[in-house]
Amino acid sequence: MGVGRHVHNLTVAPRRSPVTSSSGRRVADMTTDPRTVTFRDPGDLIAAVPAMVGFIPERSLVLLAFDASGTRIGVTMRHDLDLDADGIATEAMEVMIAHLCEICLRDNTSGVFALVIDDRFEIDAPSWDHLFALIDTGLDHLGLYTGFVVADMALGQPWRTRWGAMGTHGDRGILDDPRSSPMAVAHAVTTGRVVLRSRSQMVDSTARTTHCGDPSCTYAVDSRTKAAAVGLGESELLRRVLDAVLHGLDTHIGCTQLRVLEAAIRRPPVRDALLALAVSDVADAAEAVWAELTRRLRGGGRACAATLLGHLHYVRGDGAMAGVALDCALDSDVGHSLAALLDRSLRAGLRPSTLEELLPTSYAAADKLGVIMPAPAERAAG
Image 1 (spheres, rainbow, N blue to C red):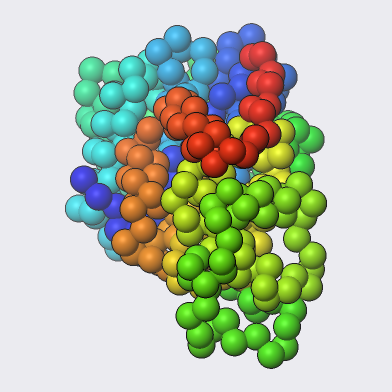
Image 2 (cartoon, one colour):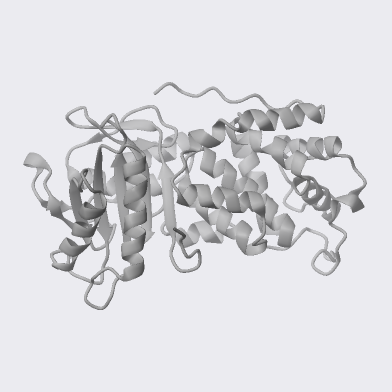
């Protein structure tokens, strides 16, 4: 079952570290922070959603699925809300809801929360009951635990429980600022990243810019970027990329260096070795290089850089940014096999830990080229 990549935006964001409620029950997971965040009521949980998906969602359906232990949210899923004029889910939306529910059931989920963000209909509109009933049916024996509605993810917006209940906390309230929620603050402190205003900001981060600082650059009109034209072996190409990661790229990077880096990431053995950087101590530096190459390169080179960027975000559990990067890769080269594989895996809800299990292959590729890669970073206990 596929997702129209240019029709809907699907975010599947697996999470790892625990977050607790005021009663001590873990109700959400962050990407990297092993510390806990306390929720006083359902409003805190709702306000935490932007930090979970990486941006402030609009006109979206978000599902938060508990893992089998019932103590952690194993996957967070967001999708554009596709509704008819009466606020009823379209046929395409019903298909997508069924797909998301399949992911929940396949992953041994013990409970699911649903959040609707939509400003087109009142939060008390009966159409939301229809939507939540679809989810409840799709979850089969599990059922939908609770469904919330809010018009806009902003300070002072009223939220309403439209399905199920949250015990003694009540069925309505006023939203705190999601950009300064405990989850958002913890996310910013531990990752250095703020919650973006919208998904479009993520897309903008991969927007094309000039190729290099050389005003006479002919990159866009010639074909000299092929690996064979560089004249370097794969071992040396890998070393050149590692040097760029360890020392950074100059703002006015030269055309020659960019052509070498493009030749490197387009060689499968070099690319396979570079995938290991996603779990290393230099992952942030690698992210910066992949993002810069994504913006500066075109065609197959841009697709290769965006694939490395998407893989890195996927491994760290940032499904939203992974999806944006992989969209970029496939827009640049629809036949890019690794990007297509990662894209299918992300949409199917494959967990990042599955990709990590494949990383020894990357280290083996580097060993074959005679290059020592940065060791995997130590993971915080959680």
